[in-house]
Image (cartoon, rainbow, N blue to C red; front, side):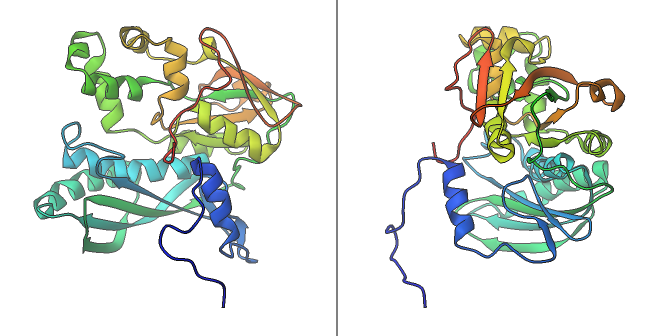
Length: 323
């Protein structure tokens, strides 16, 4: 019988990644049926099933004064589908765990309305789940998908590869800033930025199209300043990223400057973009058939990320649940 400790007697970890790495040593994640386990956006079960889970917690992932119950339901599923996109998979079905705090029962229906709308948009049947009472509102969803080609994961970036990203970065963070400061609502693009924050659109089709070409890929949920460090560590390479090259919607830089931030810094650290970032051969950027922006390259060297461009600081960080 392993030694047991009481509440509060375990180790306190400084960041989320260190905690996850330690927790992985306390469980058995190995099996002949597990092709990829802890460390990627999702686990891969033989032969082609991709499995992920993510929660949305009141006061952490959303605020009631910023998002409607419908928004919360949509986003709860969308962030899980983004994990599938990073693995080049399409959804098979979802299970939903809904925890209702005191007085939250009336919110269940509109939450499920938003969840259902996202499910229909992206072809993900909701096949079951559970409802329970708790100290606060949270929605946790587990999604299984199927990959047509071997899922890329975060291992495999090679020196000489370029780093590229789909879509634009920073718009969700700009939307959150507008929600926090009503004085910014008169800026161009404020309403669109808020919508991007409330209802992200996972890159499922792009992920499936990219999977045969990329050497490594992940979704951008915590900001590339944090997420690319994870890819660098898993692949054992150094990533060089140009902040000036980060793609942004035209309305994002004015919001960034109104906040006193360099636009590239907001785009790198804001998080909740749910775009895909990847390492692939330069020749495949055009060949893959998906519009991409090259933001850097892969090199030999200590695993990590080196930033250049306006506002560059190698200490840049995105979201971390323990920071």
